[in-house]
Length: 218
Image (tube, rainbow, N blue to C red; front, side, top):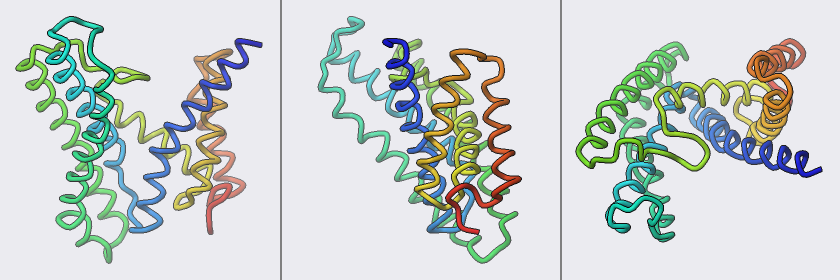
C-alpha cells in the first residue's frame, strides 16, 4: 500500500510539472498561433538561473558550508521567472511578431534556431558563471539535475502531452499530463526500457483516432 501511495504521488508530481510546461506551449499556440520549439530551452534557462541564484546566495549566506543555507532562499523563486519573462519580452517583438502572417514553416525554423542558440548560451553563460563563483557541482534543482539537454527532453514530452490532449487546449494539456505522468510512473516501475516507446504509442494511437487530440478543437 505504501508503494502504491508513493507511485501515485510521483505520478501526480510529474504530471504537475508536465502540465506547467505543456500548458505554456498550448497557451502560446492558442493565443499567438505559434508553435514555439524554443519553449523547452526557456524552461531549461529558468532552471539554470534558479539553480545558479540559489547556489550563489546559499554559499554566501551559509559561509560556504554545504547544507546550511537558510530556508529564505525560497524567496529567490521569482528570479528565474523574471529572467525568462525578460527573454520572452525581447523575443516576441523582435523575432516572432514579424512572422504572425507568414506560414508556420517560418515560425518553426526561427524557433528551432532559437532552441539551438539558447542551448549554446546556457552552456557558455553558466559554465563561465560556475567557474567564476567556484560552484562546480552545486547546480541542482529539486527533482533533477540542471543538465544540458533537459530543454529538448522537456520539449519532446511536452509535445507528447499536447498531441494526446490537443494543442491549444489547457484542459487537454491537463488530461495529457495526467496520462503521461501515470503511464511514465508505471512504465518506470515495471518495464523502464519501454517507457518512451509506450508514450509514443499512445500519442500515435490518439493521432490516428483523434488527430486534434482528446480535447482539442478540429
